[in-house]
Image 1 (cartoon, helix red, strand yellow):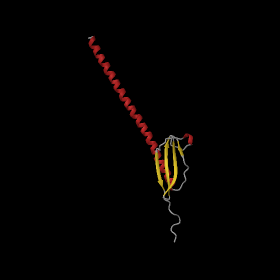
Image 2: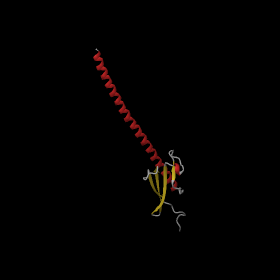
Image 3: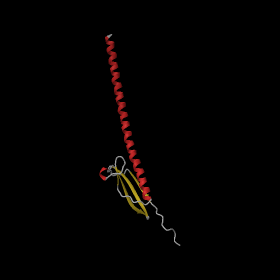
Image 4: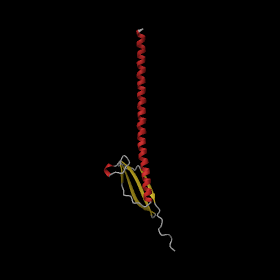
Length: 132
């Protein structure tokens, strides 16, 4: 009778070890999924900020407002000083076929490639109307 009990306890112990290994692997996979979703969420927040801020600045440029470049923003997406910034927005002015053009570029943490870039041209209506 004692031999039958040892055989069952050995089998139970092996099943228990396999179950622990299975749940450990499942936890590791779930943890990776949560970390990846967090990283994707942060990237999409940064991209959403870049799109909305450049669009807003493009509208201000369309209305004739001059924008001092570069603009700096911190982690909380608030305007800040140069040394404390996470995002930098550059506004480059040019002309194309007598139209004022602007290139708005958003950079994240001094990266070489911009996170988002927007090019705008603005047609300025002639003032005073037609002369006769």
